[in-house]
Amino acid sequence: MPHEIERKFLLRDKSIVKTLHGTRIVQGFLSSVPERTVRVRIKGEKGFLTIKGLSNASGLSRYEYEFEIPVQRAEELLQICEPGKIEKMRYEFSNGTHVFEIDIFQTENEGLEICEIELSSEEEEFEKPFWLGTEVTGDNRFYNSMISKHPYKINPDYYSI
Image 1: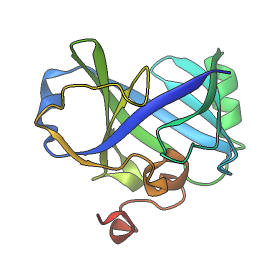
Image 2: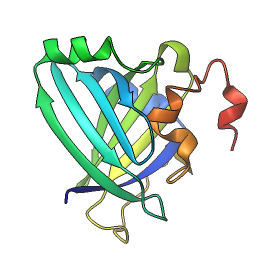
Image 3: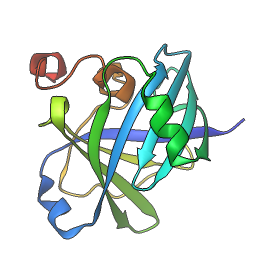
């Protein structure tokens, strides 16, 4: 069964994105229940359908199956998603063998900035750049499915650490 292992951090300093090329992402959720989240995403010019399972106790690992779909189908599926679409710019920063995905949220979630790193194991070490802030791995508030229900601009206190 395919699993993703990732750690999530708030961004301390977003100046790093000035040097990177970003990709626009629009996504919605057909199902946002934690046991089976089903996400529709348009990333740049490509469409994706992703199914995620419940996170393990540490919040680091969970089942994930993603496959590419025609962008036209993704646009159609976005029309029937639950309320609360997410729009963000994603920037990727390579550091050694790791890639950090930096999400700068837009529209209803403007001001929220999150960085993720995928790992090959829960114990894997990695160099933490200075611009990484507080770790929020396993904090459900920072799952995209929850962000779609609790927009940052409306509920900034919801995200207080």
